[in-house]
Length: 159
Image 1 (cartoon, rainbow, N blue to C red):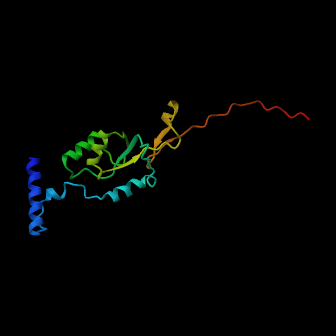
Image 2: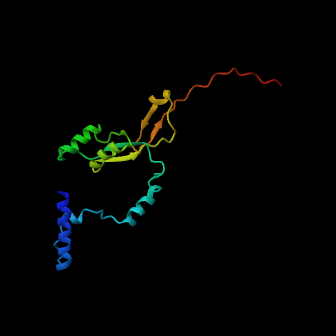
Image 3: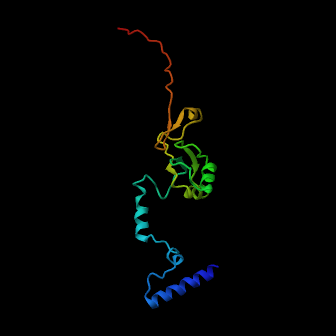
């Protein structure tokens, strides 16, 4: 089938070149190549610093939030939203930055907000895990409890 399509596209292109009929282009021929120029892709790749990214060391975890409703959306988008545990709106869910998850997020990117997980205080220790929370900026904040200082005996001054 693809051989026939390619042959048909080349035949139509040859026909339009001979007869100078620009309106006689096949839609398949129009959309086979990327319509984004290489210069534009190069500009976008230079914007990693603007968005806090590092092309050599990508982030390991995504913070994904559903920001739009799934009502009146196709069934496959609803299945993907359910599969990624995004049933409730504006509830952050953490997913790995791996190709299988990214390919699912690609299909529902208009329904979700995706941010990298930031650790401003570093990785929390095991005893601090209960005191962590995820804020709306995608930062994992550790609420460290103040521990009481050991009471020391006050010695009187000797003069």
